[in-house]
Length: 330
Ligand SMILES: Cc1cc2nc3c(=O)[nH]c(=O)nc-3n(C[C@H](O)[C@H](O)[C@H](O)COP(=O)(O)O)c2cc1C
Image 1: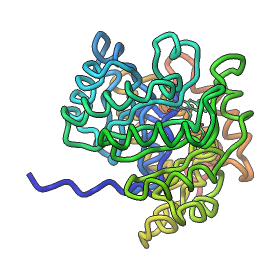
Image 2: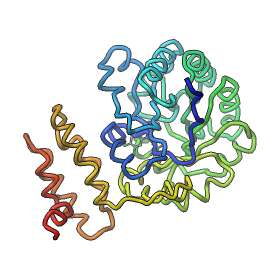
Image 3: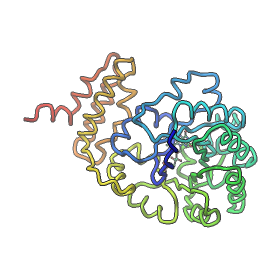
């Protein structure tokens, strides 16, 4: 087998539960060829006891694609990393950033920042089980454990165990008292800490995340860091990624138009419908495509009102205002 090319981490779309499922990723891949895409978090329990095809299945067009795991038991994490590698994922990432109660009850996610050795043991066990990169997505602190020294100690241990890259959501998380949503908005962003980490761990690939809303902002942050990860803005306004291949990755290939992207999505939707995927499960991810454009509201409304109806098929999408217009154009 030829050696794998190293992953280009300069731009990534963040793992987002309920959002970055396979349909969303397929759609985003039509807009950008090079941006690294992440799955939603999948727990080790779900993979070991649940429906693997449902949790791991993806379309080859989604590459490069990273499987994010939630868990804290090194053996289970190694087993699931192996599953991910066997299914063809390009990297395995550990969630050390989610503060939800459910995740805390399972003793994983952001609360693992208090147990650096557990994270280091997971990374080491996973590295021993797979040849693809193993990475960690973390916060800059939790609760009162929020000094730069504690963060650097955490990163030192994780890097020492062989972690291939660290993705840092540049705000701390409060494990009690704030909802996951508030934990993405209220604690202040500290980009300077992420930049300082890169200075202190120069051989570790460091990717910054949190509050980045434009590609120009991403380009600026890339100066000195290895990558930028964008979450909400990429989902809610996917067209913000349209220039990513050119601007971030230096690929001169022409950018398709929104309509071309939609036209390429149609066969995917048709195939999905044919195997029983509800229309809305696919079209709910494309509501933001026309954000900021004339007709954006009519587009959203048409899909929101019609795509969830029982038996809704391709005709709903074809009757959406922008596609209808092209269908009657000379
Ligand atoms: C709906 C939603 C679901 C999320 N689910 C996950 C997840 O499964 N794993 C994870 O590490 N982070 C998750 N996050 C956090 C994002 O990956 C990201 O760190 C956060 O939104 C900050 O980036 P942004 O400001 O660019 O959105 C989620 C965020 C949102 C909005």
